[in-house]
Length: 531
Image 1 (cartoon, rainbow, N blue to C red):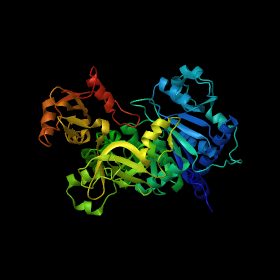
Image 2 (cartoon, rainbow, N blue to C red):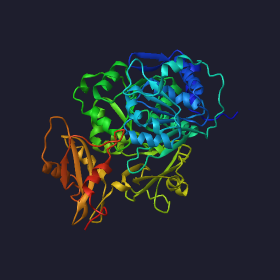
Image 3 (cartoon, one colour):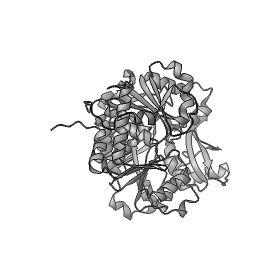
Image 4 (cartoon, rainbow, N blue to C red):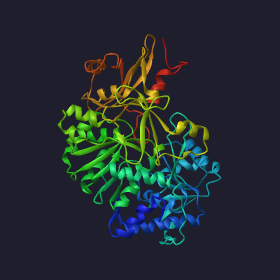
């Protein structure tokens, strides 16, 4: 009675049980699970006609769309490997990834054709390019065929199924490559299914849910939401760009009940001055992760009637590891305490083992003070980095995946990140959590976004500096920000200087790239500590 755990099974369930249920909304386009299943089969058959076979790589460069959603089922159905690309990368980075991944076919949105046009001659292994478009004119000419033509000529039945093992690689997800070359994370079908089950449980996914794709589908497979919503017969609403007004318009018009987003997107939503004019569906949940959401942001979202579910994970773990599961006893706590509790990373999800370990791989005491590294093991963890055995061995040493995130465990078993190893500021021998200082900055009424990094100091080695983006129309003096923090936290933790900026460098999912900010201040120094 053994059946392999495959993400495709979620769509198979929907097409069998809910064929006439609305499945996908993308602009004016709406279609059912029956149609979704047929389009997925047509894409699988079309790719097969292009020569894609089991184990081949199919890359996809596109913003969120119904076509990208279809590929998440069609490519694994062939036993091939889907490589979703971060559309915010540069042409040289695409050249590296497409070559390194040994990609055979590239599905490319019309808007991003110019990113690949200059490197076609550098990619001899890419046999075919396929335009994703309706009647739009591509931003550059490629030797490409049209997606819809490919589907129109293909069979809506997948008559020659492929025998796929759950331990086969389903997706190849390249990390952002912020400090080195991007690494290709190999996730198996089983890892993807494990994550989907965790997703359904932690976000309380229901058949009646209408899910808005605010999170890029390329990022850790859209966190698994594509497969999860299909499995329960929910509706998926595609969103091409993340902007406050279109998000609120869709949430109200389609009565969206569920979404996922990085904390910086929550900041954008919480600060939108017209948000109060909208009427949302009851029980709206937004899952967030990538950085701890500031208590002030949680408070603003709750005021809109939106419950934020704090999740934690990495691309290498599928991505989810923990969720901050709410306890009824917390309802009686003071509001400030409740938000602090909710901002913690939480506890292991049902199908993964997460611990905070010391250097000897012993679990740290649950005292809320002893710092260790978040480590994990389980079916959701990657098989390794594609063609990078040394990095794989380093990441999976001792039988655990090492996240690089430093954390404490509280008496109730809940994990709280204190920093990335490289983001801890050591000032005069005192370790300062940049996350803690950032959370305080978000409490100031003029602050829209903030990042804290260590900068050189002749006396203390390094000291915390705040880089701040103000809310539209707001002004504040540097000293006021510094005093605000000093009045509310240990003086050595408060920023010693503040720089006001118009933008902050971010990853594709909205996570602030502190390394880029830090590098600005350490240029010319041989080492990252002075004094």
